[in-house]
Length: 115
Image 1 (cartoon, rainbow, N blue to C red):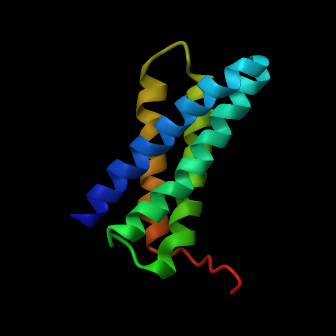
Image 2 (image 1 turned 90 degrees about the horizontal axis):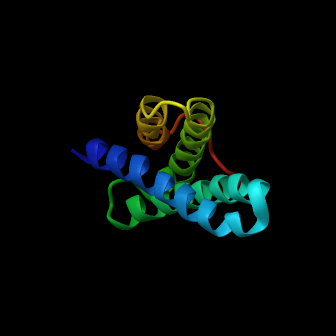
């Protein structure tokens, strides 16, 4: 059940962060729109790991690998969404990639930050 909640949080929050980042970045033109979306999504990826730790879906030792997995999934999803903007299918289905990255990252895929 925790994996389902992680997947849902990891799918929704980075997408929301990317949308808010794009709105804020739009003030600085097209480049700001894209950069704001990426930065917003990456910040939200870290927030996913922090929230998941706070509600005890993951342990503190899994926080950074979860954040990294979410960020990688978000970046892949953003690349797919940017390439398939002419159809709603690509952007909608790609949101699940960030959630998938969250679940994979929570399994601690070998990344351990220096203490």
